[in-house]
Length: 342
Image 1 (spheres, rainbow, N blue to C red):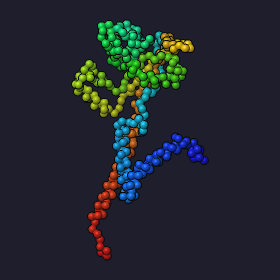
Image 2 (cartoon, one colour):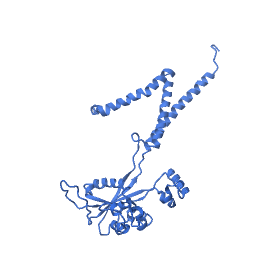
Image 3 (cartoon, rainbow, N blue to C red):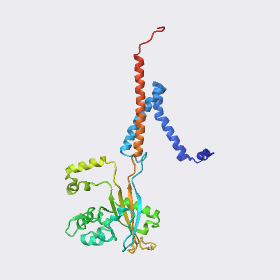
Image 4 (cartoon, rainbow, N blue to C red):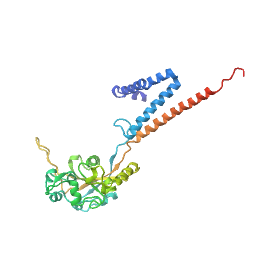
């Protein structure tokens, strides 16, 4: 009786029509080729030739899928951010020790300059390029003209004036600009709501996003290769760039990559009918919530690779079957006929 309930649950537009489409495709395409070969070569030989051709085509197709996973089709798990720890640091107080050792080196509070301090140091039109309550990530993504009339990026400003680099003030961490922090922030939104720290993403403001670990970047491997001559025909330190690309291509494992998204609660405000929503105001007395995540590299090419080996194995099997059949046929033809009664 259980099968009756399964059949009763099948819908025409989703299940039955899909099954019929697949069956018609198999009958019309491979079936028509087998019918043509079967009438000329015989049922068994025609099937072997048709199967070898089909799996040869599928081997090429799955090899392409392996190189570039398809948008629709067999594809493994996409890379994503997985939660590790949510560390709450009270404002103006000494925070408790985190459970994850990597958080012990995270720069907090007075270790970083404030956004207003950076804007005052930069001068120029930097303030005009930023939102009303900017973060260091907003500054890193900005491009402005300083008081001397020189156009520079906010990332360059933070690196040269405040030494916000991985090897100096950030102690192994990297400050992500707003343009690069979208994926970690989206993952942190889902984690905070799911864990019950906030009811919705509108109850807090995203602050800065930091990252550490992972595969070394070109700047890590070849510091001299990154700069003004990076986009010329022959860049600086090109042997190091070539060797870095080779190592990146053949690297089988990757060190853990962590990201921390910092958020802080906002002051509740009532929206006035007919007016735009009020600008969120950070509650300075609220604790800062640090969402630590680790990068799951996924296995996007695992399924295409599995299908490639399956199709390639079946292709080799049917080709060898045809090969041994031909050898046996040649042996039979070369045998001398035996006279009757001999």
